[in-house]
Image 1 (cartoon, protein in one colour):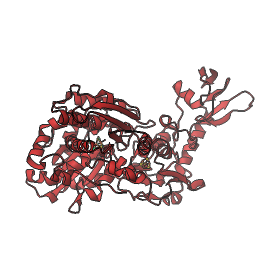
Image 2 (image 1 turned 180 degrees about the vertical axis):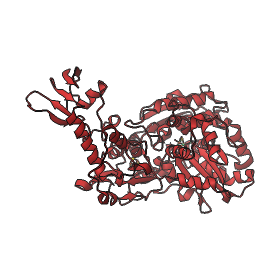
Image 3 (image 1 turned 45 degrees about the vertical axis):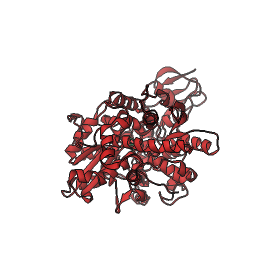
Image 4 (image 1 turned 135 degrees about the vertical axis):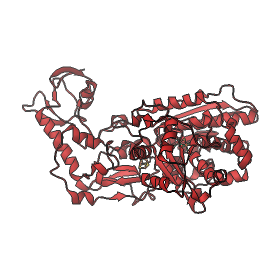
Length: 579
Ligand code: HC1
Ligand code: SF4
């Protein structure tokens, strides 16, 4: 151990520890901006963590950055000396010198780590602001999903690190020199020609408003307030367990009923649940998988995660034939809402607008795919991330936690099974699919409904499951996070991995921590465990646990679709991919 003095108090530190880490363990706050411990990122670029130290062999106190200076025996650290405080303030003022000064209209207002820092150091003025230089920086609006606003970038490089080292997409790079050194799309002019797959992980770690989703709350309000339109809203399995904290409720609270009430208060005409469509997806994907297993076509990859689809199309086009052709639950529900629902409601299809609320940025891109349009209009008209949905509620003066929970409006598309509910966490789609495929093969339900061998948090998990009958034992794998996905796909392509069915979720943890979820300041994915516990609790409490036993899914097939993988089902609920 190392003996040192922290703000006048003798204490001990660990060998090889930095001043920052030692101070944190002793509950002493040192302001930081660029570093993010959860992703092991300490570039030392923002220099906000300056502190004063006195050490043997030096006459005068020195100013050092706490994040990358190791502690030493006998060192005295002063984090709150006048000199340290003045230097911290100066650093923040310098950071603000080429950062837009329009906090009130910034999308990150209230959730910005730079704003917090300015408050902490007591910044009262900004002597160095260079408006012309700042406003000349690029804003990239070329993606239907993402916005990259370099007028707000603080060069912390967290986005570059998460994309390169964790997701292993490597779409971002630092480019330029001196004051013009900024985050750019690596080797590309715009998003469509870049390696980016819209997973949104860079947004989750960006401390300011430099990276965000394309905000569509205005268009949502336009639709809601247009008396000629019938607005249908759907929300994803994970949103209900990853939203309440924004309104002061405990993390992981299931706020499904509150969201339904909020949607009605907002003025949406029909409130639907994507969970229902997840059950329909299992009917389609299960039948497709069984057909492929019988034909010896393997492995099959799941297809509900749009950032994974983008990843496959951009980075591994050779595996596209292995992807399930089943559309995602978002697109399945939208297709039903545009084809079957109008007759039920007695309205013309062209008056319907489908808005979905998703913990996902890539769903915005998915919604614009030409293969998923009907008569020139997208099936999903608009996608709001969970963050935008929170913004929408605020704009309409709605406080979620004061609302009385209620149910869904639709008498025909509201019931979901526990299998549909668990889509929101890694391993959930696989578990839901196997519950149904087992029943189709054996004519009876699995004795042990909960396939706990599929659950867990390791990046890549594998299992063998005996499906009985003609199919026998299948080998399955579940992967989440694109870094591990890359490793798994490489193994499959090299013949080193041998699976029948593979579930892929691009975001670490699956949708419960999707790139469109609420952000946590100075933390990466801190609430995953609580959210997934609630998801599994929803499954346990569900009246029906398997997609094929959902009576409303059965009715939809009886009244409209015929059988899974029927011609109509293929036309409405399946898709194709492009390299
Ligand atoms: Fe997901 Fe899905 S589970 S992709 O993770 O298949 O976004 O929640 O809505 O579509 O159902 C996200 C979540 C979501 C789809 C479903
Ligand atoms: Fe990288 Fe994902 Fe961000 Fe695109 S959205 S730049 S792939 S982290």
